[in-house]
Image 1 (cartoon, rainbow, N blue to C red):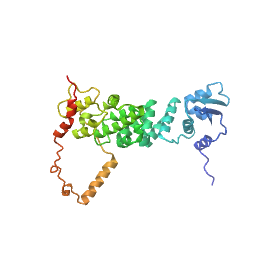
Image 2: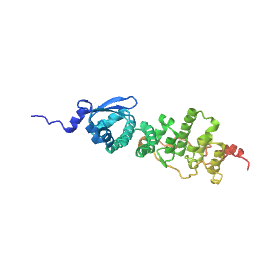
Image 3: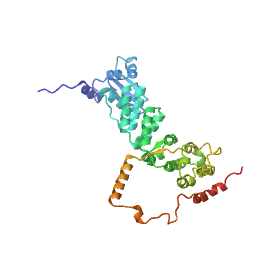
Image 4: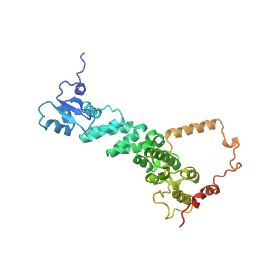
Amino acid sequence: MSSAPPSLRSKFELCLNNDDLSDCEFLVGNQKCRIKGHKLLFGISSPVFRAMLYDGINSNSAATYEIEDVEADVFHGMKQFFYTDSVNFTSGLHACSVYLASWKYVIPDLMSKCVQYITDNLSVSEAIDVYEFSRLNNIPNIETICSAVFQNKTREIMQSEKLLSSDILTLETILKMDSLKLESEFEVFKYTEKWALAEASRKNIDLQQQGEYFNCIKRHIRFLTMDKDQYQEGPFMSDLVTSEEKLSITHNLLGLGVGDRFPQKLSRVTEPRIFTKEKEEEEEEEVKEEVEEEEGYDHDEEGYDYDEEGYDYDDEEELNRQFEYIYRSRPAN
């Protein structure tokens, strides 16, 4: 019994890495990588290649064409799509680069494949790089995909080394979100402060200048949604917040109102963000609770009585005392 004849697609796949019957050659990218091809497949796949290959003076003979706006790995991706209707993407950034080339050469089906790959495969480790590439090259649909990763994997993003080396617009994108996978605004501030310290080190920003230099990101921190303990441990002790700003925030956390004197460069938002936990964190807490229930663990049985130890976290007197030095430094009217 004879085997089925090879399909048309399988024949094209054989041509992909075989220069037999090739009738054009491309010098691709900065390295002038030589890549041969078949005019027919390039021409029917892209109107730009059709014009290049069939409307010029070399349309009836083998010719060499320079492709300067695409690198070799991206060109190979386009060529593979022309021959096989598929692409072996190597990374999210590779898919982004192929998307950009597909836009330039008017290949909408390949653009869709790039977006689908990024949607299905974008990792936390790549999300920042892909976001910054797509923002730089004005690819809003891929920016949206990355933003969803920022929102759904906030803690992993904020803890990554990639964030520390990211540009300020990337951090701003995260800080503008109303919903994050973190526990509190205190966490938002601490991660922001960590990024700011890394940026200050890179750009040799003096400690005294940091409070003013980072106004563009501080305006997205919802200081007025923090409780007093969070504020005392975070912004109150930070060089990222100026003395004047600390005075204004303290004034409002003590219930004296926002007022006209509240700095315009700080957020006046009093509505907390929506903070949610990632699925893994929720599962870990559920397991911990189940174990404690099985073991009959009871915090009260351990004999801890915070009131007897003299701790009263609702008492504002101690907090007010620690804020006094700010009031003493308040500029005279």
